Image 1 (tube, rainbow, N blue to C red):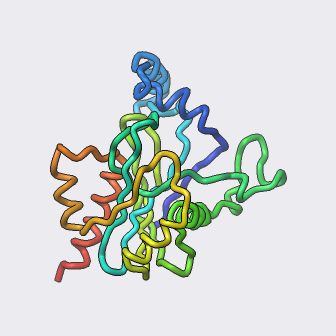
Image 2: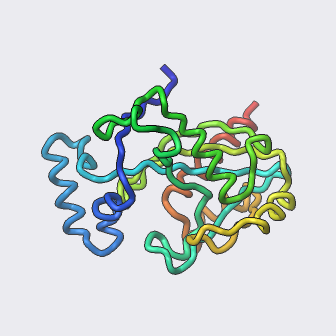
Length: 219
């Protein structure tokens, strides 16, 4: 009763760009047309004909209570110059062989999305699975482009300085300029201040984390 059921099929980033990102890339009329075609089958199906590739987001918190925040460079197609959170996408080829994929449908017993979280944390930051505890926060959907994302909380046993030193050894993903550490109260102020540009999914992820903090401080 407390689980989350995901019905997944194979997709690709090209489908995402050609459907979900149409409005962001200057084709709102075509985006709305695809949306209206889905609505013909029911209001809840407005995103039926979009690529809807699944994203994974991580709220990374250090041992000394800093939240890791990235900023996107100005050359990316989605949200240039915005603050963001570490994240990425599941890689089906990392999980499945030919027997596990039939007609584009993935075998449910073979899906372990936590593997993708571990991979992204290692590739982007340099964290190994021994460096943190992982928990699931929830599922969000970016209403700018209908993209769904799973949000995970990563509570590290390393300090900000330790993580900064790890980052110095990594090649940063092309879409990010730097990684920074903010105190949770500073991050809350940023979420409230319209001068700070924050991606919709990062905003949702950090607000989820704020709810976690509130529960921890309640008597």
